[in-house]
Image (tube, rainbow, N blue to C red; front, side, top):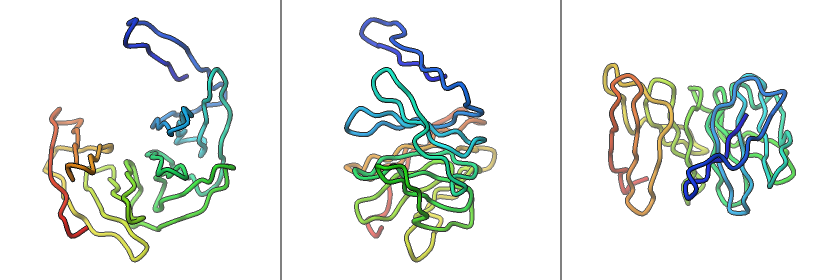
Length: 173
């Protein structure tokens, strides 16, 4: 289930039941108010709009799907060894192959991506391949991250050390 919480009233607004969900992972919203939720074990992405929910995309490309982002046109998903774009009609296609399973993902203006792996490394991924731009510190695993493009900063929470790692992305990306 997914819970919508109202900060102003400090209360739960809505509970969305996803009866066939197996292992919900990431949540992402688009500019139209749609909410997308990845289901890692079911290999699908749910779409929540208003008071209803539905399977937005179920595809073998979404094997171990975790991270989600919305790039203004498509939902972008991190999966096992690839980045998958899902069009507005729910059709999935691989946009880049990776030598790692993608856990967190953010889209860059040039069409490339920042992606994290389960150990906590951050990669720059483009059509020509991937490069590690941040190598995790010992015992400081992380999966998700946030990227603030105006600051060129990555905010990387760790779940073993219970800390927040910050670093600036190179201008050369």
